[in-house]
Length: 378
Image 1 (cartoon, rainbow, N blue to C red):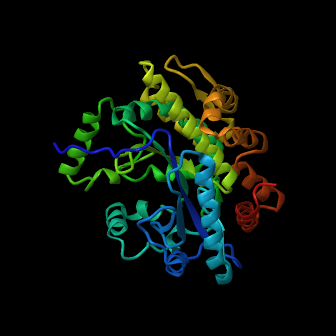
Image 2: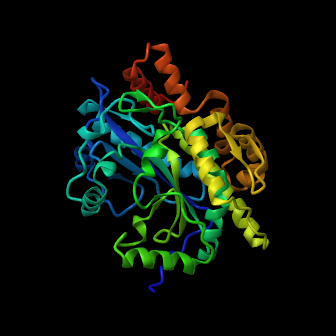
């Protein structure tokens, strides 16, 4: 069995990946502007921060450099949005971020050409893979010792619904109201190597799993495990992948601060020799579904005993508990931005409100998302 090296990484540093959709200004439809935007930017794709392509030509992805402070990573993103706009504004292309586009059709989207990885994915997954007209925010948090990576992943799983609820931004799909706060969650798990990670113990268990799946041709390497939460050996991080696309930099900052603080809290517990609390896989799966369906109104399972509470109430408790850690990490303001989401509503709630106020106009929903990315939430 081949060992998987885990890169050296500074503890609790943060890197953020933010997928943005390209929108035709006149129609509000998705537009395949990504390759032209990247060509005009002419970026060096081997350095960070960077703007890069994604599976579909309607998307550009902003990737921050790793930073000790969340605010610095988000500053990278802000600067890159401004750079991209210098290209997109003259083209009549707007930028938007949500878990899904409210009304564009998946079968009209183009897969980015010339990328063997994407071609292989679509060839294997066919109709299901072609539906990946979705956008998310991925956060990498540095782990200084690979022995911590899997315990921290297991320790983060009880917080899945908290992230899902505050990031939920995909109530519409292909012109229909889905009844879900996050339809993206349900769509993304269709891929054969996506969904919840197995709860593994030792690093050798992860290496064995990757070896098995590579041997039988499911994957070519570990990066093709598209779990909601996974180790990222290349960067020496835990990668949190379960958030819907967030429409403002302020929300990205808040969710990233929550991730950074929780990882640091779990890391400190491991340093003290404590065993991290975990949830049974069936409870984790149920929490994932509840948060995708009900968002901020989800009643979630808190612990192995099956105690339950409203996700927003638990988030307020968590914010208080993490305050000293946030203060030490320099992300106190960003962390408490979560309270603004709790008070003002998540993106899915704002989108449904716009649709309700405009007689069900999904074009108005797109316009509101474009405005939020440009100006923030009023």
